[in-house]
Amino acid sequence: MTEAGNYPLLKVKAANCRVVLSWVAGLTLENSLQHPSEYNDTKAVCCWAANEFHYCMEQSDRYFSDEYRKRVLLALDCFLTSYSALARMSIDLSRNRWRVVPKMHYMCHTRLDIVATNRNPAYYHCFTDEDFVGCVAKSSSPLHQTTCMLPVLEWYLTLLSITLQWHSDDS
Image (cartoon, helix red, strand yellow):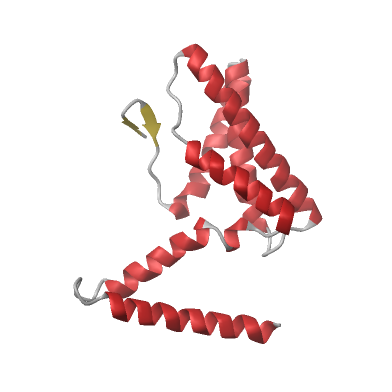
């Protein structure tokens, strides 16, 4: 963990983030049990909620079951509420806060999407975009930077065509 300006900054790869998140949730729970305070308890709830959100996505298919839908919505509600409370407490305690306003906006929209569609964000949000960036990087790395755009676009369109054909065959 490093400091960027006045904010703590945690840099991890997307694949490792789940493991780190689970570890942080356990660490904050342990800290809350050893040093009970409203601030520590709220941190533990916030980290649990973020971890639970990711766990529910991992355990679910494209659409949430009733059980996982309830769990993921509870986790999102707890995360949004506890993070807002932590931001207020941090100001009162003059502590550094995570700069996550865009993430809060993302989480609010994710919650609204789940309520409206019951779809698992792991299948259509930035999680799949991150996988796509990795695929594009692999396919474009052997090409010259001034001429790589057309072959990468053709490659992506071919994969998209195959994927759409595969999904239409499932229907």
